Amino acid sequence: MSRVSCLAGVIGSISWYSVQKALDRIKLQQIAMGYFQQTQDSKTFKWSYIRDISLALSVEVSEFLQELPWKPWSHNEDASYDEIKAAKEICDIIVFALVLWITLDPKADIDEMMESTFKKVEDRIKDLNYGFNRT
Image 1 (cartoon, rainbow, N blue to C red):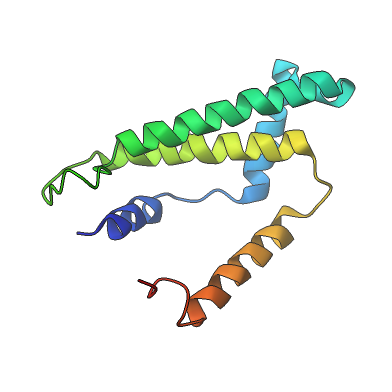
Image 2 (image 1 turned 90 degrees about the horizontal axis):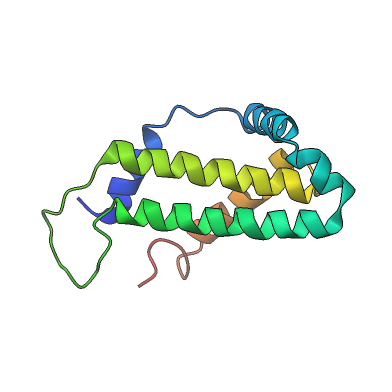
């Protein structure tokens, strides 16, 4: 099984929240912890918080990779991985990414921005000189 199909299996097994539901819940947590108001009141705190959350996001991506047989030099076709642990790391990644969205407060509709991003990817897939068929 290829790494891409392994990842697709992990992602496909997640029962997706709606983006807005996740944003609302994270914002309530941020308010409860006092972070939301602090990021609204102080630009210095806001940028420091964005830096800290970005670092946490980076760590979660590293933890996700540690759950997969990602080392191209090992060439171990039978390498196993824990799908549940990998899926949990993906959830952590999503939460930290949404915390960044809330903190940045871009005054944009996330659904429209996501739709635009998906459209770009779909356009690339259609182009035979780009996309998944590219070598």
